[in-house]
Image (cartoon, rainbow, N blue to C red; front, side, top):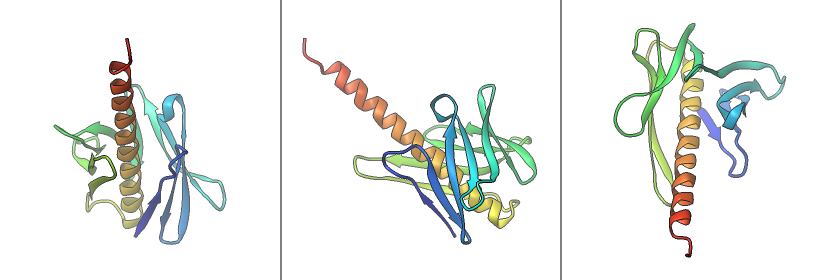
Length: 145
């Protein structure tokens, strides 16, 4: 089981997988990179990095890219063969965000749990950013004049 905790007022998050606690630390321009650190040792375990136009992550010993997987809000980490190793979809309402994550059977359990947590984190932050942008647009168009 993996548990993801995302604070309301900070951009990072915490993940607990099998008793090991990890911290997600966004960095770079608007948090485009995310370092995954062991909370106890501070050691970086992996990183979602920005390469050209894509976020990339090493999964299952291969380089994957974060991509849109079609219409709607479906995104995931896609391997070199074009097949998704992790796929996620979220929908956001006024009071809650819900979604689904699917992970390929080819990933080892710990790596699959971490990949699912990272996918959920990226999708939740994306939904929050979209909601903020929409609220800003409404405020800008309804201003007095």
